[in-house]
Length: 291
Length: 156
Ligand SMILES: Cc1cc2nc3c(=O)[nH]c(=O)nc-3n(C[C@H](O)[C@H](O)[C@H](O)COP(=O)(O)OP(=O)(O)OC[C@H]3O[C@@H](n4cnc5c(N)ncnc54)[C@H](O)[C@@H]3O)c2cc1C
Ligand code: FES
Ligand code: FES
View 1 (cartoon, rainbow over the protein chains, first blue to last red):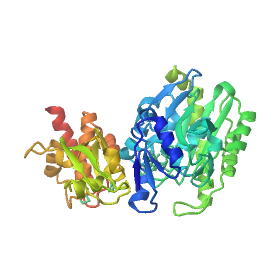
View 2: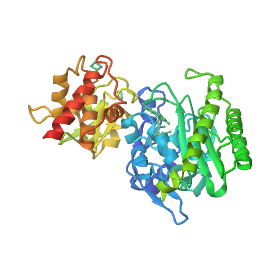
View 3: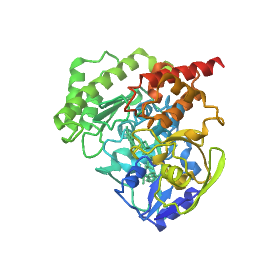
View 4: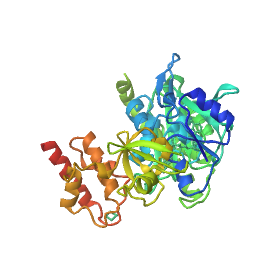
């Protein structure tokens, strides 16, 4: 096995072009488990820890945030929690403090597990994934087009994930996750919501209840048509939203839960997160906090 | 491959390291520091917690080569000669150690908590230790130890 240790992004891309079979390793919280258990013996590891720009984030001229693939959860929570509240809530549920000190959104995207906790808030918040190869340069992929199958993504073998781009929240965002403990659990299923009041639109993301993370599109369209943004939340609208969210899931039975349970829980979490977000929106609390 | 890094303030060089090896393996089997325990090798138990450049991490999930040039501090590096660190003392006094397998990881993780948070609440202690499993104590004595260490630190 080779251990490749580029110190710049250009070197990293060159190494990946030269050795497409090399497995990138950032926080190692997925990769090292596979190596320790000998599930996988790659021909080479491509350590990204020395590529400093991957661990940086910035505000772009268009107002969006560009967050390097190597920013660990602990910093995402501390430094961007106010601007990306949905993602920060999800990040707080990842593993344990030790895991959050090392694990990254870039690694979560690289692993592309349907249960990855960053995915639902990335979907709800219209994130775009920035990937790059030495041969073809930068490519941006909307989160909704990034996940292709169980642990399969749109990333090509010669590409690396550089960053994700996402607008700072313009309205309340919430994340909810079902698990057997308050720490160290892979989601049985999860749900994220983001209100976009300027566009009178609500974004959603479903986790661990389909082969890929996905949006609940019919539920989003229903709210775009039926939600009265100047009124209290209509219980009939709330109930229908929950039903449509549950219908968007296509879960399986596995050791963590049954398909029926997951579908039910998605409906419950959809109603809950919308209620939380709506209460925050109506109370003016979000504006005060953001202002 | 060769990995050169600093452990508990001393430069160390490990040779013939397999590229897929973990920092935990290097510490225990090549540098001769068996304090950090190997219980799960999958990040679940926290017994292998060490500081990497000042941040507590599971050493079993750090690739050896990722530690090249970096500073590692293990449980062996907390005491000042024969004087135990206040966190270690508190664990002994409170009976927070039974078989002791989880202790090194808990001590490092608790050490980090009280460095960062002067007087942690119970909720903060529980949150900080959520990634450290103990099969013996039932955790109550461990919570006592962390409260005691934090109180002593705040008083000194
Ligand atoms: C004990 C434990 C608990 C966990 N709990 C959770 C949890 O609650 N929720 C959750 O979502 N996950 C959890 N995980 C999984 C893991 O921590 C996350 O998926 C994390 O986000 C991975 O990030 P990383 O930087 O450590 O990835 P790594 O292990 O370094 O990499 C993960 C994958 O991404 C690829 N990759 C990394 N960086 C790039 C890049 N820049 N470009 C292209 N590919 C790249 C790697 O090749 C690999 O396939 C847990 C893991 C452990 C060990
Ligand atoms: S041995 Fe590293 S977390 Fe269990
Ligand atoms: S004292 Fe035995 S596992 Fe904690």
